[in-house]
Length: 235
Ligand SMILES: [Zn+2]
Image (cartoon, rainbow, N blue to C red; front, top):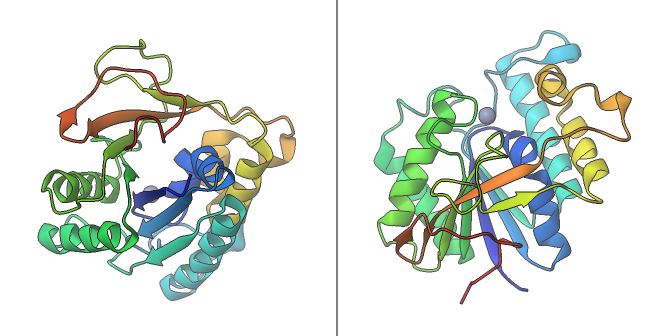
């Protein structure tokens, strides 16, 4: 299963919040998860690590992402410095070109990114969503066969309905991996606890399933189906 899946996100930790099971599962199956993160997350909070400068936080978050990437089995990551909180001010074409080049360089066959609401509504997430759509729908990423939105939270949408998650991962056997990857993002522990509860209270942890909406598959939009794996129906 030598397939490459490109994850396109805004900040260090976005990948672990919504995709830890998926990334680890791809790696476990011999696939190649690759990650593009547009910012260094320097505008975020530093949680229990105490006050620090933006540059210090950026450096810490670089290391945190490196560690989480090792835990999740990310094969290659590209970390950009496009300004945390500033992606909507960035020239969209520049962002689209960077994403296109990244997907082409890796020959990504599947792409995963934010839904229209950015999951949390963060403007950087929404900017990434639109830029990835543009890159994939432009036809300039010829290796890409499928685009998914990571829709954590709509679990329970009716199956076989347009816009429903076609793929849901319960994370069987992978909960500890997700907990470790979350813990690697130590500076973000307060928001992690807000979403997932205290990591020290597990195992077991009560993480919600990860859900993915298939938005585009080789030219057709919102194909209605259920999938067992992100590799289903690839040519
Ligand atoms: Zn984020």
